[in-house]
Each structure stands twice: as structure tokens, then as C-alpha cells.
Image 1 (cartoon, rainbow, N blue to C red):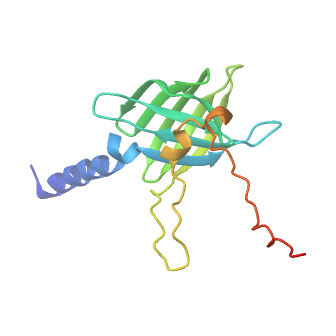
Image 2: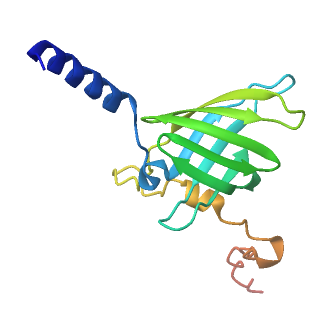
Image 3: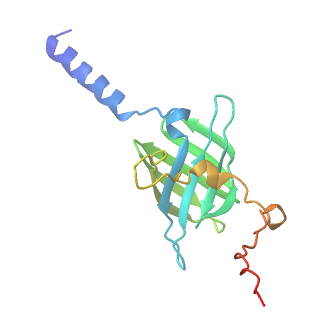
Length: 164
């Protein structure tokens, strides 16, 4: 085989390898956010993936409210697929971006572009000692009113007794 043909073959194989990206469960895990454009609304969507070696799990939020659990999920190459809340999600991951085709109730397809949210960490600056709310905390169920910590009324110190 000539050197020119070998070089062309090498370039073609390299280009194919660069174009085909394999997404790992670890890199998919976390929060992906974007805005879904609908006819009458534009809900802020959050996909929170929590995949392990043996399980596909996660939750979908719309405007901060739980929309549904991820079900029947799969990850093949750069494509992730699952169902949530009766809708069908198919996303193609490119780095920290995901282009999702969302099949809605009437069978039509909507486009949803998401960006992976970097993991939040504790703010250790001198001005703040607060924890930033993470996707994991948001995924935890809210405490009901019956389990809420009761508020304790505060009383001021009574005035000293009056001398007569």
C-alpha cells in the first residue's frame, strides 16, 4: 500500500474516532438544566442523573417541582434515553451540553437544550459560611408540616418589680 493511501486511511480512522464520543455514567451524573419552549409556557427543566454501575436512576424537575422519576433508562455511546412523567426523552451528549428530543403527549417532538451544572461546593470565603443547595438536596423529599421544627416564641425580660 502506498504511503499516501496509508495516510488517508489513518486520517479517516482518526476523524471517526474523534466524532464518536462515549459518555460514561460518571460524566452523565449530576444536574443538567435548560428551558423547554412550549406554545403557552417555558418551564425551566432540570434532569438529575444518579446512575450507578448497575442502575439507571434520576429525576426530572419542571420549574423546581418534581415532574417524574426516570424509568427504562439506557446509555449507549453519546446517547441517553429514558421516560419520565409519561414523556419520552432522548438526548445526545457533547461535552457539557445535551440536545434532547422530547416526545410529548400528542406525539409531537420538542427540542430541549441542556447544560451540565458544575457540582456546587461549600463557599469558604470570609463573608459566607453557607452551603449551596445541590441537586441531591433538591431531590430529597421536603419535610411535611407535621415534622417541621416548631417555632419557639421569644420573650423579653420582664421589667423589675416596682417599689411602693
